[in-house]
Length: 99
Image 1 (cartoon, rainbow, N blue to C red):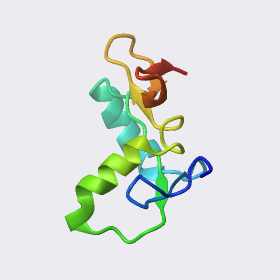
Image 2 (spheres, helix red, strand yellow):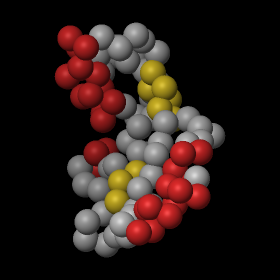
Image 3 (spheres, rainbow, N blue to C red):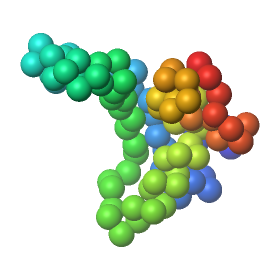
């Protein structure tokens, strides 16, 4: 099975959507408020698509599949508490990897 194909991840296939923009995060009003709260540069929105209809009763399977998906692991970014830098989710190596 090729990387990113559905399989033992609950049958879900996720894809990173890097071109998806979130204009509300860059509006002048939002930028001003983020700066006021010292959050400017510390919040990021990323989009991922998936290939099935979301079913609430399978939410646990969905979440586990998302965080284990080979298309999510190298692309999902989070802000490190210790360094304050953006890092990728690095479950593949068992620890977080800096980007």
